[in-house]
Image 1 (cartoon, rainbow, N blue to C red):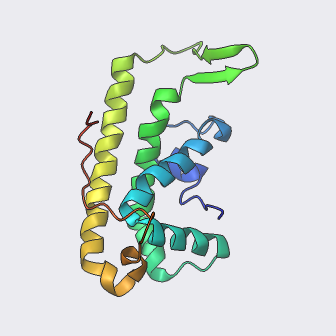
Image 2: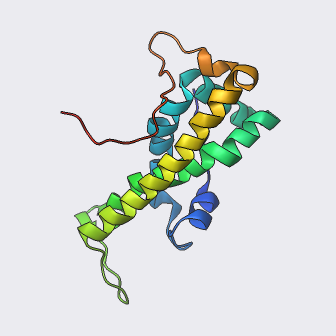
Length: 167
């Protein structure tokens, strides 16, 4: 099944510190990965697949559009930044792996990248908490697919906090 992206380049550039001159190819795959890894966890597979199919078919309902605009897109914008920032200065070309430097700027330190990543994680968690609260009051009436996961599907998570890795 094809996956529709829930945000586009403009959404990311207008709502983050990504400069408009950054090539879309540098981050578009991160949007897809972030969407699959983060949004699907909170929507559950059935609702996630339904929204994706409706976007592709151009049949998004008013309730889905509200869910996208007010909850899922803000979540995805900031989750995409969480996933993109650690890779933002690197590129692989024929000659190997390169780290970009600016002629009129200074490369960010690891601590600075970690700080920005954590800020975006906090933003993403805020929007995720809002989404979970919204769904707890509206899912039964407006989004029955939220409850239709089975077998190997991802079931919606009710926790918005990233508590780190447990080993």
